[in-house]
Image 1 (cartoon, rainbow, N blue to C red):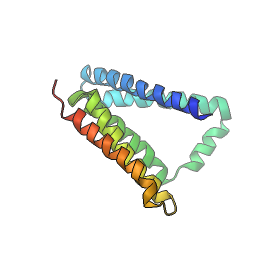
Image 2: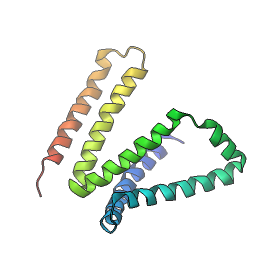
Image 3: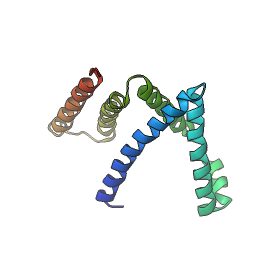
Amino acid sequence: MNQSLTLVFLVAAGIGLVVQNTLMVRITQSSSTILIAMLLNSLVGIVLFVSILLIKNGVAGFSELASTIRWWTLIPGLLGSFFVFASISGYQYVGAATTIAVLVASQLIGGLVMDVLKSQGIPLRALIGPICGAVLLVIGAWLVARRQF
């Protein structure tokens, strides 16, 4: 996949996330708990991915799945579920714009930290632009979060 197509997918995923969270808030409001929306979300994903694995790899895919499971391979699912929970709660209680602003700013900071930790001695000069961008994004998130409608 080339960079342009990747960027198109990222934009579509960002827009899709707004639609998803808005619909999940609606589900939450029409049920007794946020867990209903989260379970429906997970159920659709599980059915989709099990079907794709079965079509692509047959029964052997399930053997590979079972052999891949380690305690730490469950952490992404826990973090993903927490992300969905936090997103739905954010949309419901502070609004879509504030939720997105805070999530994006925190993801950028986490991403920068991860990139620096994974690299071998990035010169400080190379970090000036990304750090300035992160500071501006955090300021933007703060401005969005403090707005009153």
